Length: 324
Image (tube, rainbow, N blue to C red):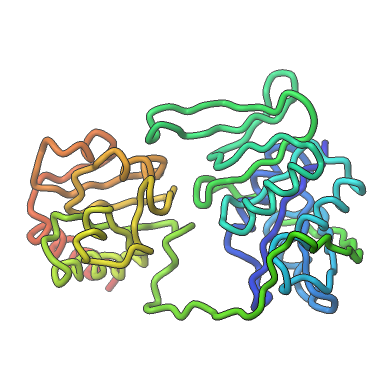
């Protein structure tokens, strides 16, 4: 099988990003998954074992003293070193802010083709990697390939729920020197303090979102209560954000965060096209809205026409009873 590189993000705290399993799984669909990770020297403990659990057949650890000091450059250097070692047919990274920056810089450096924000990958009849894009608000699925040379692919977080079989990977540790001349310098890191125990919106497997139909910031607590009952992340439509119900960081849509969870529950969301563009690739969509003509019902797998203030409390009680 051909080699496929999977770029693995590492947080400033040294933790493997939650996108790692799906990135490795996507690589495994195209060939032998080789996890590439850039770390500071001496910070390799446990990385290979964990990535092996996610299905990596080989772990390529690139140690760089610039890791954590400059943006993107160490990861680009790690990928550049890895392609010399493995001659891959593709490179896959998460479509996160950090990794898509790395992917774009790397593609330019090596003259590769970039396929961004894909929701799945496969092989064409002639053995060329194919990337699938969900476009125009999810109305169309587009197949894209790189006609010549290496394909660099960024995978939408949450879009792929496949998991590669666990493996016992071989580990290679190298030292790389990043070209930092044009790189932004990281002067200090301020870790985000979580306001709740809920999962982050980007990459969550279950999301409960609320819209302007909730009526007020005080009523939006209903979304949070259902999210807590489901162990879900909290999202919102642009209308709810503009009305001041929740911060902009919770906005799902074309001008917010694009998500692809296993379950998306929309409460009081009419379904404007810009919102649908950000969540239409969810595996299962449940909508609750009192307007039976709301566009959200056109994409919902299950729809409830009713008042959210009547339906949702009953749903929460049913979930609690089932849990007990």
